[in-house]
Amino acid sequence: MKNLSCEEYILQKFGIPVSEEDLAGASNVAEKKADGSIILSRIGALCAGKGLCVSRKYYATLNDIKNALDTGSSVIVALDYGEIDDNEVVELLEDRFVGEIPDHSVVILSLDKDIVVYNPNKADGAVNIPRERFIDAWRDSKFYMVTVNTFDKVAATYTPAPLDLEDVELMDDFDELTEALAENTHEVWSKGRMREGWTYGPCRDDANKKHPDLLPYAALSDGEKEYDRATAINAIKLIAKLGYKISKKIKK
Image 1 (tube, helix red, strand yellow):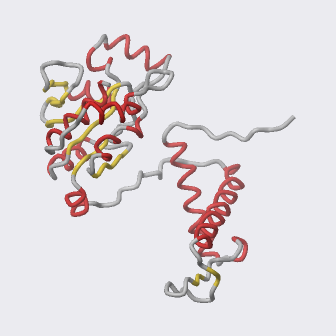
Image 2 (tube, helix red, strand yellow):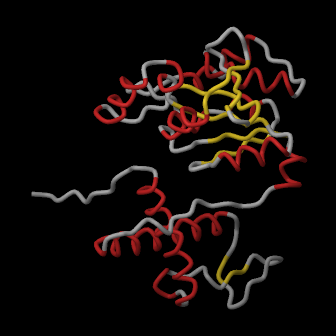
Image 3 (tube, one colour):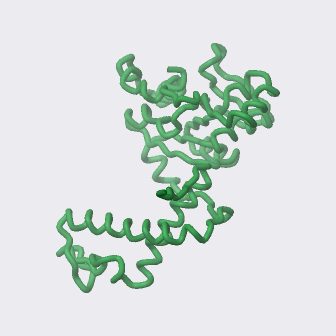
């Protein structure tokens, strides 16, 4: 339940009470994978369930943290606890031979020469972590950051910031997969629209639920196809950026 302690700490900051029942109901946030890493997408679930606005970001920077703190947001980051508390040589060997394992979360309190955090593993509360050591530990989660604030505050400062995927190069053999994803994306969109009562019309008419793109993918204009292809390509690049691999299974 240690990782839930970060969210309990933030909720108390916002004056939101947390009961034992709340903690028990959100205990899945504290679950870990088989390799000991925490499930990043579950960080912030307790805060979200209590009515706060939660946003998540990979490849965040110290400047992203500073900007969030300046707006009054609370920030949780995921990191490798051993790299801030244990033998650095052992942790370097673990990263090389076992893998980078983000197994802990802390709340960022301030940025200075050192990074000051609330570490639920320490009874003292605020803990200073040397900047370089913090960055090394944070790197293991691909610089994952969770920001928490009220919906009004977030709405006033929200600026979309998709991950920069320009450094990700795809091989030519992804062309077929890209086209398949693009077509399926259109089919999923079309099915959803039709389920809502939309039908084909030569011009878009929201009042009568008519849409010119409710046609098979092959019948779409080149511009519409490119929109779906861009969505597909970005999805594939994101998968690669986060360290996952896509391979085609060849039947023998």
